[in-house]
Image (cartoon, rainbow, N blue to C red; front, side):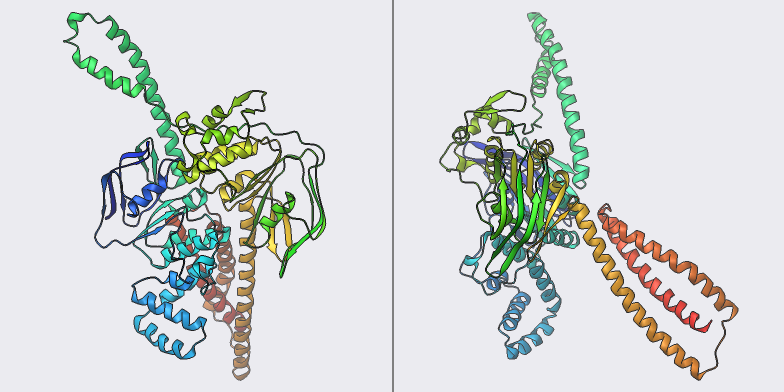
Length: 630
């Protein structure tokens, strides 16, 4: 494989904090690589350096000749004066310029220009790229082509920046948290798109299903070391555990050996010191190995929750609309103790409105919402970080409480609590503005949970949190002695936490689905498959009827023909083969929808299914011909 990008001995410091030092790795052509590290380790900074948006203090980056890099940043840098269509097609590529002119002509319904530019599209063979661009824009719900970039919401800007990078089809795609601000349908589309693209990929993401299905290699950055895993996320988890166990065993063995060596050094006669110099030197290396720390600390989240009474939250025939939009229509529900509910639905269907109604930030148009007297909300908002950037980390926590109480009756100081949240003492005295985005999220989560809520509302809690923190948050939520409502596009997180879903379908309809997201999604896929099968069956029936009519017409003209001996054998064989093939097709479709196939088998099975369906059509058509004669 050809190396696309080589990083050699890169180092970067943020103030007094060393983010990474002397790290090296190579990205090869056609690889799809994920970068995993804890918050604050410098993932986004490293991507900035690789994309030449920032410089390293030392080290070298080598790009293979003519490799074009496309970079999707967490905070996109867009020209605020451009319209959306101008920003999308900001390129010197002639095909893209022509497609831009065509799209503008269609938007303005200028028939003369459409005819003129269509000829140039033919000349440049640009229709394929125009179709792909339309698909990307449609899937990312970018329909506001004439709108100014400055007028877009944060989520719209993120989707615009992502579309712009994908449309340019670079050789090397560098993506920093591409699933943030995408709904679940968009994420599943992007997942499929990146699986099929020929672009080489380097990506930072916390979405574990996405990571598992798209990437074929993982680079872990930990304690200034680079560890490579040739496989997806599932493989990474297995091999990382083995690596940590081996390191722990190695350090433990070194410590035991060091005790022996310490005794030997102490007892060693002075006269023999020069003869055993090699052993004294070896002792120094052994001492360094024995003092290694296995950095696998976990966030401990066993904060005490306030007592729950008999009445929690009850919604009675609640409705809420805004001008021209009905969001919630006649919805009733009584929350139960220890209930964990996930909320799913497209953007604009009322998810955030629902949360604001429950917390009394909004009032319903009709119906009642009763909140139990013992209810104490903990609301983790998507845009809820309101820290003073000039405030120190420790002060932000102490402003809430000097001590935090736990379920077992013990208490902990604010500083100790921060240590449990992976903020070491030196970081606690840093100003908040010096924290990474993920570290600020972790601090915000800490301040929400330490207030002892018994009804947690989490709006996109997984954004910018590292995978290690997410794992422990999930364990905490599973044992949380209160109610939980989660709005999240992280399917892995939802599957581990929720008991059932509120599905916001639009037009005010909210349904209660008894299961997690994967069960819900599989049911939708099954319904879609049945609908497609029914549509195909109707079309096939119509074709068969037409053939039948033709055969009958032919039969009325010619004398009825009897089946020959070989035709009878063929007819009997077809009656056996057709049901078997139908059964094979169902089994293949279930296998493809299961999500359990590795990437290499997915294509093979899809091709096998396509060939099988074509063959079935041929055999059914032949069976129909023979049945008309018999």
